[in-house]
Amino acid sequence: MTLSIDKHPCFNDASRHTFGRIHLPVAPKCNIQCNYCNRKFDCLNENRPGVTSKVLTPHQALHYLDRALELSPNISVVGIAGPGDPFANPEETMETLHLVRQKYPDMLLCVATNGLNVTPSIGELAELKVSHVTLTINAVDPEIGAEVYAWVRLGKKVYRDLNAAGLLLENQLEALKTLKEKGVTAKINSIIIPGINDRHVIDVAKKVSELGADIFNALPYYHTEETIFENIPEPHSELVTAIQKETAQYLPQMKHCARCRADAIGIIGQENSDEIMKQLMEAAKLPRKPSENRPYIAVASMEGVLINQHLGEADRFLVYAMDTDHDRPVLVESRSAPPPGGGTMRWEAVAALLLDCRALLVNGAGESPKKVLNGSGMEVYTLDGLIEEGVSGVFTGKDMSRMTRISQMHACKTSCSGTGSGCG
Image 1 (cartoon, rainbow, N blue to C red):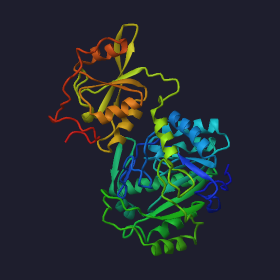
Image 2 (cartoon, helix red, strand yellow):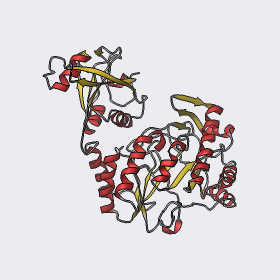
Image 3 (cartoon, rainbow, N blue to C red):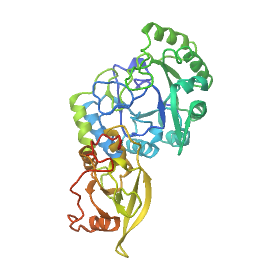
Image 4 (tube, rainbow, N blue to C red):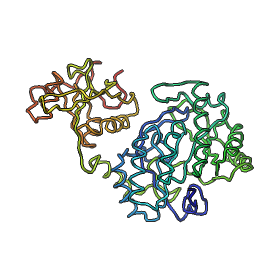
């Protein structure tokens, strides 16, 4: 099933001045924490993985792609590269790929992942003719990997130190073998981190070449503030060139990597235009699905009886439906909230988590999260009282003024900043 890489600018240096690519930012969550990564949100001056100006739903992303192709008809590749990891968000990733493949059957599709959780989806990726997958493998020795990664989360369990690095490596190598069994072109990114893995990158290239990788990208680590590695300088160009020369003994090299944003578009190395960024912003304002059907209402509650929790403090959301036969709300499920931190990205993640909810009932919320959630098509009600009364009122359209809170104070006795960091 391996397709030609002639039109893929990341895999073929000869095509990068002719053909463009677009990254659709539909995957906000990540399942590992790299010590060099700080996934700032909406930082237009930075060109690096993990940065995007908006997170889109699959249907919003398809609309954005339609507009982008009108502005940049030379786009030959649709990729998903974050801003988190595509397979920490498998449903959003696979739905997006299905939508694009259905509408654009001849488009090259690719994903870039850390490899932790891609293996369960590889069969489906192959069926969709996702022809190119990039795996970022920074170490093939868990001792070195333990210095690169703070933690790894698989399922509901978080791993640290050697356990984290060993688990990640095992899954990465298994993913590479499975991708090659399915005939998928595999590129390996290995980030050169001075004093951590710079001498080890050659071992990475040797190992992945034995497993059938097609191309290798030894790229310099990007210095980012507010990370564990913030005091490590970027590697000198001479070191990068020397490592690329040595790893070329094992695999063809990609030397034109621009360390692209999760919402990159167009020719590699060119900045996103104002017009395309406008289209991205407009797409994010669209209904999250073309035929919006939101049968549920979410509630922030400490004990499950009262609407008595501030949005920033919620570690879960209770999701209710309306039992029309008995004219009362029923609890459908409880959904874990995204962890504190991340600023606006946290509220984007909440919006994605509550995609099927028409409203969110809370005891207080800041202006920033309300703006994000309202923009996704969700109403935010700041209420006091019984959950049953509030949910029923919203479902039936009753006057809710009696339950509406005037104060926006919460548990820590301060007004909410809406930064996404939670209280304290």
